[in-house]
Figure 1 (cartoon, one colour):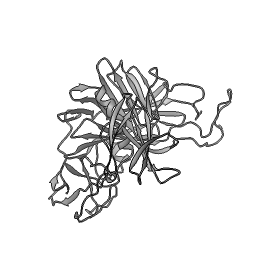
Figure 2 (cartoon, helix red, strand yellow):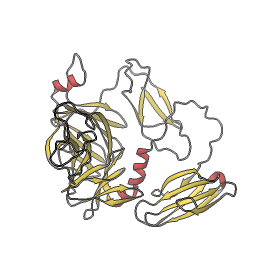
Figure 3 (cartoon, rainbow, N blue to C red):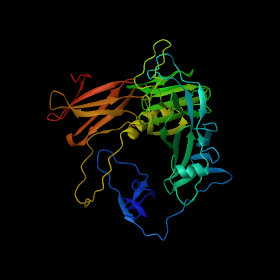
Figure 4 (cartoon, helix red, strand yellow):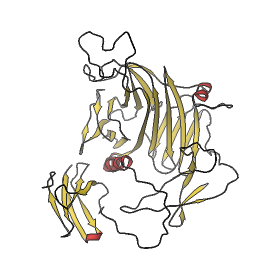
Length: 421
């Protein structure tokens, strides 16, 4: 059993199935929760403890449900549907039952979507596989597994896997539930083989009067609330101003979605024709042979959902989205621990302002620092560069992008334009 220590203190960790399939203890995967110190290498020591047997999951289904409960979070997964029936953060419910169902939209062969503004004609939905079908699909021999099952459980998180099918397609949907905090991760591995269909993930919220917002380049926009297809970047949010509540969703590469009556539908896949083009009433696809289509085969998606007071969620959502999309590097390294730690290269005192660029200037040996205020509120932050003895107050207006030029030789910072002038 790998156990993680930070500065000699044991921290919450657990062993999980490694990505390889060596059936000996040659490789170990360890999951732990810790806060990284900025601007330097963070060291965590992993020690091995011998156990007589692999620990069994403490959480087990009861009465057809998996009920996950901490001081901050309650999640109920229905073992008959494989869907989430409750997501409650800090005592407040945010989702209706049957949340996170993959739905199938009746679509056409036009890959450009030239002739419509929305994809709302639901043809059906993925259903939970039977135990026999799920066992066969999973490649299990000699035993029978339920299609909703606990695959990991420990001091850091509980991981639940559910298997779904529709037509010629299959989905492995994984829920990762933290023992600390209220952010849940939903991972979708889709084996998509449908034709002229679209796949969306349906999240029916209880914020039926909420407004729909999404991240755009260096800003945020309110998105359509009438079911029309919308485009955004790293995050989406349903905000109920009357209740002062917000449900947020961070993704790692999905840009399309729609929203109506409190329901978010995230666009995952379409199976229109490859390089097709609608012309009058002519069929787009050749009707006498196999034709290539887009978005066929296996795809993997990851989403992080969180909820809380609107001010809190919207103040931190941009930084959270950035950290989840630009993950820290992990090295298996064995330094002695002697010597002095270097000082941080650069820090910001404000927890909301983003450092979006730190790079060499294009036409000189100076460095370019680019800051962004993502919330629409004017604020100040202290920029500190210890190695150069620089500590400077920086003021930013609403949604301001501020470009700074760092002269290392003179140990000075000056404002510059976006073109670094």
